[in-house]
Length: 82
Image (cartoon, rainbow, N blue to C red; front, side):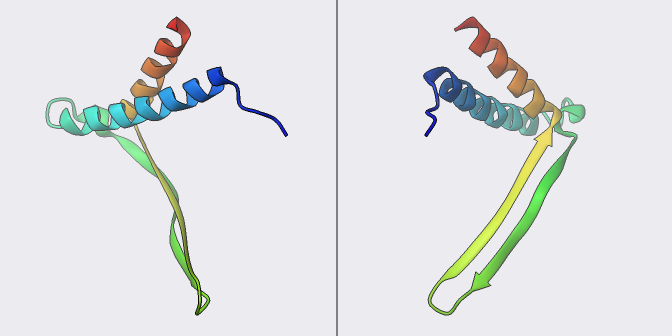
């Protein structure tokens, strides 16, 4: 069984925080810089499976916009500096 190194875990966490920060920044600055909020939604909508005793709902949507990509690059820059 392989283990995830601390460097990989830190990178993954920074990329998540960078994407969240970038998305929030894009929403806040949408009126001043509308190009930051341009993007696409990738994934599949939620699907529900009802098995009488158990109900399972699966779904995954990822919203990627210009600000999110900028957040990724900022997170990578921070990771290389640590």
